[in-house]
Image (cartoon, rainbow, N blue to C red):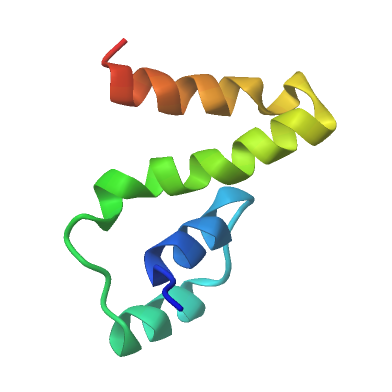
Length: 73
């Protein structure tokens, strides 16, 4: 079985995140790869699409912002 810890980390940042101490400890134990900053929005898009489907358009602007970022709009 395989999982991408960056996917899990991105989820923690979707809805406000955890404490600064959490991220410092995480980075000290499992440093993020250079590509994380670029792929984080894609990982977060999944969770935002699920919430858009379940709870409605309140999540639409965040989805639109991520799509615009990658489409260059």
